[in-house]
Length: 288
Image 1 (tube, rainbow, N blue to C red):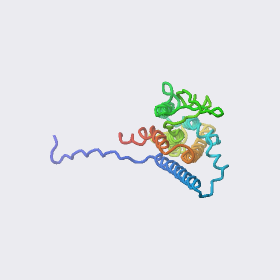
Image 2 (cartoon, rainbow, N blue to C red; image 1 turned 60 degrees about the vertical axis):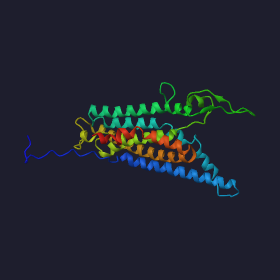
Image 3 (cartoon, helix red, strand yellow; image 1 turned 30 degrees about the vertical axis):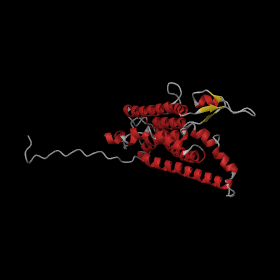
């Protein structure tokens, strides 16, 4: 029974939505996309002006062809293989942190990695047949077109995936072709910041550990100087590799928006690129 002197329990404060470190990176990557789209619009305006008799200074064709080609080295080895690089950096960080974290903490990190990988697979690799990206493209009227023979119309090929279309020498035509680069590079970059970069930088002595499991009293018992040096080397190699990759991906997002895809395809790719990170990391704090 409460009396007049009994203090009333204070109401629990409502959780506040604070931007996570990855949110600031997301803002920078979105700026790169917007800049690429702006330069693409400016280039289209210049081409339209030149077709009406004006003669603006064209971009050097050799420079343009490098970045407008899907075969440029950064695209082939760093953008298309983004999830392979993400996996390698994540596992390297796990290995460096194995002596500093409890098995339960390791399991949580691995579980989130498995969920992120599943999200990538379902969207771009396989979903009981074609992935969701390919299903949406075909559902919106897309077809696979083979290169035309001389003096003939290009034949349409019945295929249910981008991979099989390209294997046959064809290309997607029509339909809503979601920007796979926006999806994959944003998904990979946000995951690396959340699961690798932020934890690594939070404590140089306990990589990839949460605050509850971090100890600043030095290396764990039984750690030899050689193992400690190896773990520290892996620690900073992973940090440098993550920062370098994200810089490359920011550049590739700029050129993706500048030379490939329309605004609708960029928007859907971007939304799906943050579709795993936003509920699991940014908005989950509202449930705490």
